[in-house]
Amino acid sequence: MSERIIKGYFLRVSDEGMQFKGYMAEFVDTLEYLQEYVDGYIDVLSLNDEIDLVINDEGKIHNLPTNRACIGDNGGVYDYICGNILCLRHDSDGNFDSILESDIPLIEKKLIPLMSVDTVEDRIIYTMINARVLPEYEEER
Image (cartoon, rainbow, N blue to C red; front, side, top):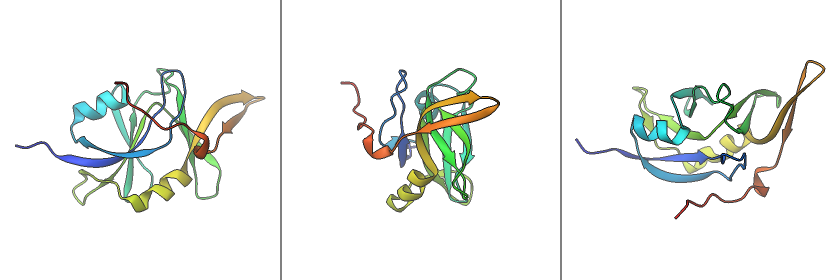
C-alpha cells in the first residue's frame, strides 16, 4: 500500500514561543507524522463543518507555548491552542484530506497569533498580535 500525501496548512510555534506565519505544505498522512508534528497525542477540533485542526491533546497540560487564539463568530476569544496546529479538510468518511488555498482566509480569521494569556482578577486577558508581523518558518538544515 502506497503512502498517501496530502496538503496541510501549518501553524507552527517554536519551543521558545515564537509563532510563525502559516504556510501550506505536503506531508505523508500517517498518525506517526501527526504525533511527531504536534509532539504528542493528537486531538482533532472542528474549525467548521469542513476544516479540522490537529493539535496536541495535552498541549496546555504540558505547558507547550501558546500559539493561536480561537475566535468565535461573535469576534470573541473562546479558547486558545498551545503547540503546533495543522489545518486539514476531511472527506465524507472522516479521513483527512488536503486543505484548499480558499480555506486560508477563514483559518487566518478564526486563529489569531497569541502572545500571552494572563489572569487578572478572575478575568482572562489575551494579548494577540497581527499574523502579518510574524516571521516565515524555515526548516533547520
